[in-house]
Image (cartoon, rainbow, N blue to C red; front, top):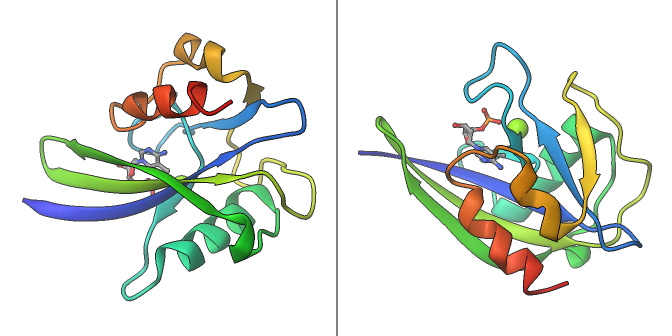
Length: 132
Ligand code: 9L3
Ligand code: MG
């Protein structure tokens, strides 16, 4: 089965809330709330891919030193296997805004279950509630 490498971030604000983004209409899994991120380009390091994606999607600038690996998501969809490390990030430059038409929400980790998420993201939630 094809392996797809994606990288995602749990951006945590000063109040301990985490940012989730709603996948827009026209994309796969539209309407579901996810930890922001995206696919690695060929040969790209995960941290570099995440910094690029967070800048493209949210307009923020993240330093690599501010990314700490937390855990991995591994999920077999029907047509591909998704492997996705999740990084914690508490510091960045700029205000996170929607650059690609996606809705954004800052949510307490214990409220994440109120938002429908992709199957790959759901097992990540306990890692965040356990951390904060
Ligand atoms: N995906 C799942 N959870 C996430 C992210 C960032 C991505 N937190 C899945 C959705 C797609 C694939 O990874 O199947 C690639 O994402 P995108 O490039 O369509 O955003
Ligand atoms: Mg993305």
